[in-house]
Image (cartoon, rainbow, N blue to C red; front, side, top):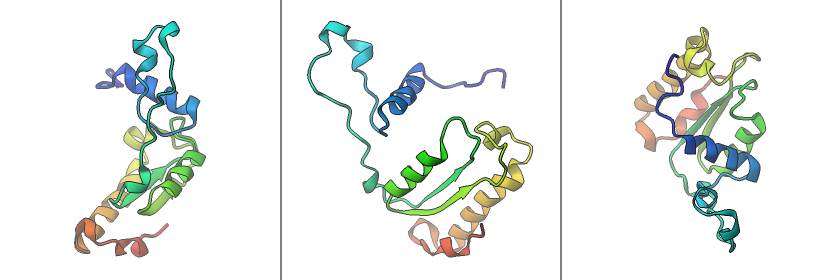
Length: 138
């Protein structure tokens, strides 16, 4: 944790703030960084990500105490994606964003579920087989 968040750009954080302020999941808006205030004219807006075109099966794992993603945003994302196979709310109220990587209970609360999904998907024929959803236990 001495170098956390290693590998991140300040633009990642700026993009995250842009999404919060706009309420939209869209491309990075580079205009504020490049243009002086007096030159910011026109109505060129960054494009929303076309989530309806995502065809890969998706599993969303989230926590109610995660300061980086609100449960309402996860629900909104799930309703925007056409191929959500499962959504899983980690059943521990204190579980947060860092716990997905560093939590002492991550193995039982998260990793075992992920490995079960991956193993089951592999046995059922890979990414093209979407019937594994019925095998998941909540």
